[in-house]
Image (cartoon, rainbow, N blue to C red; front, side, top):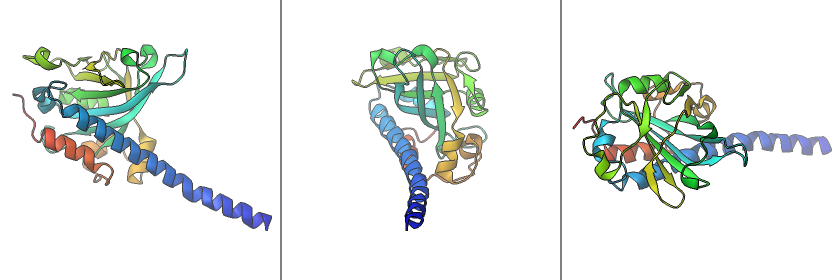
Length: 230
């Protein structure tokens, strides 16, 4: 009887763990969509012209410090890119991504910060999708302009514009220093049920978005359906 009980418990755990992991991935996709929806609902925060020029968008919801005294800050989020060879087509399915801002700490003195990154160049997108890279070193990145500051902002040498929103709602361009970005391969496997690269997801269209990923595509399609340099 004890052996049967133990076996039943092991089977229950084996069944439950994948479900919990999937729920966690769905939560990440849902939270990312909600952050993006709230931020893009206010045109003064991320100007429409800059969003329209973006070839990829990364969202990292609720990034927190990993430990008091260490200062490390680590976030998990998503990336979506425009389709087509020239990256001017419809928005892709989301791929899971990681961000490590090291000792930068959470912006604006908050314990939780949402980050949104606009990738403004195809070269920058290719660098990010190629694997782990450091902003500022492997790809140029600056705090994104907002409101009136965005007028005339058209520096073709900048690959990535970075923004943050603190827990209290304060929104601003965020300087991410030498933050590193990398694909979250384990999470992508959980979402799509197989080993798959971020490039295959967002550039090659190798998979369709899951139901949990569709709201992200809907938000971006609604707010910026077409690429524009104007």
